[in-house]
Structures are given as structure tokens and as C-alpha cells.
Length: 323
Image 1 (cartoon, one colour):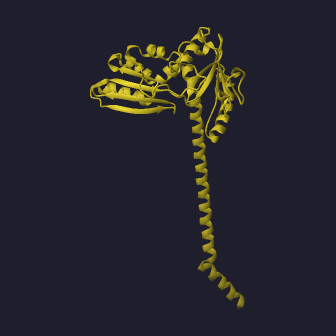
Image 2: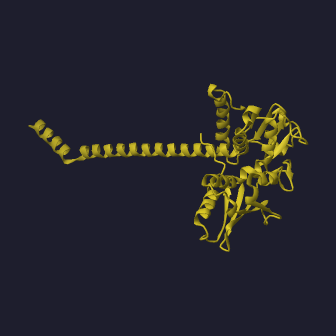
Image 3: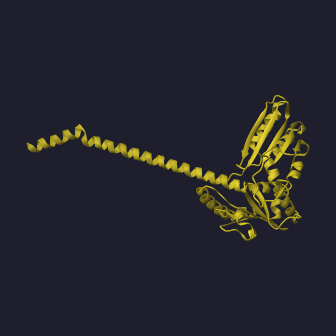
């Protein structure tokens, strides 16, 4: 299975092109959308070609999601910690956006390898902003503590008007996803995919992975949650994350995997649907070819039956009989 990458390829390519082009850049004013829920507005001006203004619009948060000044908990601190002096947060952000940043490319490291690391991190702004509260909770799990002033059940936004839930404890964090899909075919494929996903987790090769469960009804961890937040047509997926899953460099990978789990499932559902459509088209084409071959054989037989050679043979047999 294919794992989604954290940096936005479109945003990363623009940044690299601008660094390479030097002062010969052109005005850029473009919009792009990632995973159908996070929208970017990228601006460069020829008057200041080494400064990029990046505005980010996050998914619309449902009522149960935890926000601080319109942003996920800890998002501002996460941006400052990730980018340092390279990025300046503009307050207020541009209209219709949740956060606007001014990125000064002249403050990038001179070493090419280090510079590429910073550019990749800037292109991963989705993970930095949306993953801030998730990383905060999992960082406490790594130290086997619970973050202070946090409820027993935390709702975090990951899609427009949709949340996933975390039940933090000192020795584990339980993560629950209500899975929703709009298309009826996607619902059937996703339900089957998720059940196979749970079965695959039970193989010996994945013993160290977080435990995974699927249920058609809300698990006990979601007891008392608003019914609208539990309106899932493809069931509920539960992961149990332990401290060993967030140690050291594993933390960023775990945060990204949990943050984009729904997008991961949607991607493979669409791939499965496309694969089946391709197989169906090939099957139809093979049946059409078989029918065309049968039609050609029937036409040859018809010509043989009604052809002149057959008629001459019949007449010869009649003459011999009459003699």
C-alpha cells in the first residue's frame, strides 16, 4: 500500500524553483488544494522576490473540535518551533484564511542539504498546523504522562465538519475515527477495506504496530459524544498507540499517519474502484472480440452453404440420380 507524503509537492516545487531562480523570479499568485480540505494561497512579488506570503485555510471545524483563537491547540507555537526566524506569522491573517505567514528565503541555511530540509518542512505546513494538538498529546505519551488541562476525550478536526477522537492516558492513547463517505460504492469498498485492514494487522510481521479494531457501532470510548459526531456510514476504526510508537523519530511519522488516515483510506478506495473499472472494461473488450470472431465464423459458414460450389455439387448429385 502507498503511504501519503507529508510535504505538498506543488508547494515544495515552487519554493525550490524560487530559490534556484535567484532574483529573476516572476509574480506568482496561485491557489492549490491538498486532500480536498486544506487550501493554500501562494504569493510572490517581483518587488521582493525572496519573500513568499503563504496563507492556509484549514478544514471547517465541527462544534466538538478543540480550537484556540480559531486554530488547533498549539498551532502558533508549533509554527515558531518548526521554522524559527525564516517564518513570520502575520496577524490578522488574510480574509477567508486561518493563518498567513511571510517566509523570508534569504534566511534559509547556506548548506544545500540543510536548506532542502527547511524547505521540505515549510511544504509540510499542514502537518505542523493540524498536527500540533496531536503531537502535544503523543509527546506526553512518550514520557508516560498526560497533558495538563486536557479532557478525557479530545476531538480534533481532520476533515471539513468531521473530527476524530483521542482518549489520552499515561500508558496509551486510544484514537477513534468515525468513517464517513458520500458515494454508496465508496461506503461498500471502504467497509470491506477496513475489515481487511484489521485482519492484516493480526499477521506476525505487524506485531509491533498499534492494535487496530473496526466496529459498525461506536466504541465505548465515545460514550456521551453528540450523536451528530457519530454519524458514520462505514463504521468506526480504533487504534491504540503505546509509548514505543512515539519514541524519538517515530513521533512525526505517527502524527502524520494518524492525521491523514481518512485520506489514506479514501486514496486506496478510489484506487480499488479504478482497478475494478479497468478489469471490467478489459473483460467487456474480450467478450466483444469473442462475439466478433463468432460472427466471422458464422458468415463464412453462410457463404459456404449458399455459395456456387455447393449448388454445383447438389446439381451433379441430382443428375447422377436421374441417370
